[in-house]
Length: 209
Image 1 (cartoon, one colour):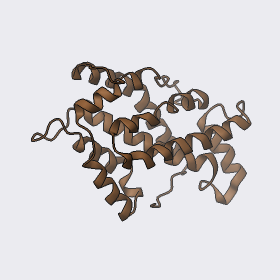
Image 2 (tube, one colour):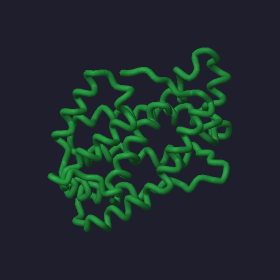
Image 3 (cartoon, helix red, strand yellow):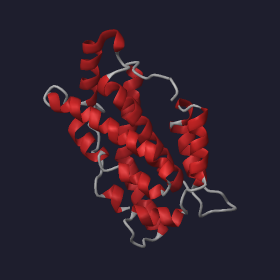
């Protein structure tokens, strides 16, 4: 659980604006999460997240004062790119990044909610499948969906996943799940706020890859 707890997301202010720098710092520690899932088939999601973080950071670094919040980036790019927006720049990168973050959120939430296959309670396929269907499936074409199905069979046991999340330490399951619950408080609020921002600005695109 150390992987998540060492780099907590900030509590959102009352206006639910997400500050860019602390957000980028927190998400930069998330890609190794996909290593805990064991299968190399999750590598493209990990690479996608890394690439999108890099793109957003590159835009932020051009003017940290102007781009203090994620919304300021979207507003500036909307003005800058006109009709091309939101299919460009940090806006597009954040659109895909938020989907990867939603996958993590939905997967961890399903784990702490105790959802499981009663016949195989130590498998995490139920949790991973639910997260995929919530966050990513609709944006993936047939081929990518088939690759994901294959990845499910290589998913680790829950006990092994929690141990990997705890950086190899043996931690009691309930203790680990309690730490995940704590991590989810600010993380979920942040992901939800980004989704709300995209809806409000009509910045989401619905194509498949």
